[in-house]
Length: 194
Image (cartoon, rainbow, N blue to C red):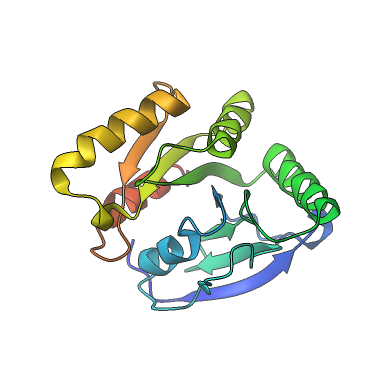
């Protein structure tokens, strides 16, 4: 997709605040610090539109990025080692679950995993959760520029096996540094906007 116009329309913590245009939505899920903001910035050809942070857990709301008045990319709070209280984590859980299970315009999710490591229990649980609700899923292994090319098959095998990726979902290797995988991610998004 040729991206010229992007706006960060709103941040929401409950369904009352979700956008009302009805554009298709693709949610980005993943551990804190896995590279969700970097993926968004790469997809929209911007350096720092989605704020990246060295402090895990910065995203604490559902952030809706309006792409060309055609689509929302939705940045979901990261799971895992965010420095937040147990109560806050529970609130995140409720907010994320409500969004994923009730949102009509949600057409698919992208789960980001760190390609340098085996998927975490949280990654596996999230994939099982969205699979249970039959939400189309693209698993994106990030930071692939940090891995030698001859190790990529190992990453593919490790992620596919650990997450038990089913026949209808896909895995894509990605690097924000080299832009590897950008076109394939866009192709998947466009296929699921219908």
